[in-house]
Length: 214
Ligand SMILES: O=C(NCCCOCn1ccc2cnccc21)c1cc(-c2ccc(F)cc2)cc(O)c1O
Ligand SMILES: [Mg+2]
Image (spheres, helix red, strand yellow):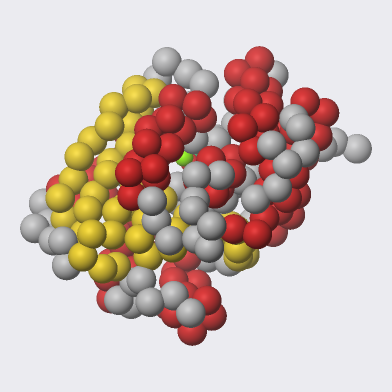
């Protein structure tokens, strides 16, 4: 019976990475996706930009929309200070089940809460369910047409504070043109574009970093 791509990625991690070593998990996924089959992880080029933004912000509370196999959750969580928390949201239960195993294999499961569901349903419940007052850092990597409505929802739910950093993947490919229009013309945000390439390809892509000004 046919395996899924996330299942094949998990097998590659179990075969090639060292349990409890997040960097080896990241390398194993990147190697597999470069040499065996492409997958929509943020990847090593954009991942290095993600690393530098996370290190600069040093967030205590992080929200990730779009877990997929957990690659960026591992990238982010491995850089968090003790006591910091990442909440990552995945829509697809089968994919979430794989991500859970990859996050555990990396040994950073204590820093990560993986929640299954849609961002539109979960964002309004963040305060009551997780005791969050606001997020220090948000990584947007889910349905590209949800970037604008979910940013507005985060504002309305009081989950952004002066200085909250939003980092959006794929603003060029597949593209989030409405998001760029919304965030770049909004005086409540200060935005900067980081040019890069679509993971594991030479196709142009990039990350948009935006600071909420309150
Ligand atoms: O589509 C992409 N990501 C999104 C996945 C579903 O996310 C669904 N999803 C996950 C939580 C969540 C919460 N609420 C609603 C939906 C929610 C995505 C796609 C590509 C890509 C680029 C070129 C291609 F030719 C084909 C694909 C690259 C990326 O880096 C991506 O991130
Ligand atoms: Mg992406």
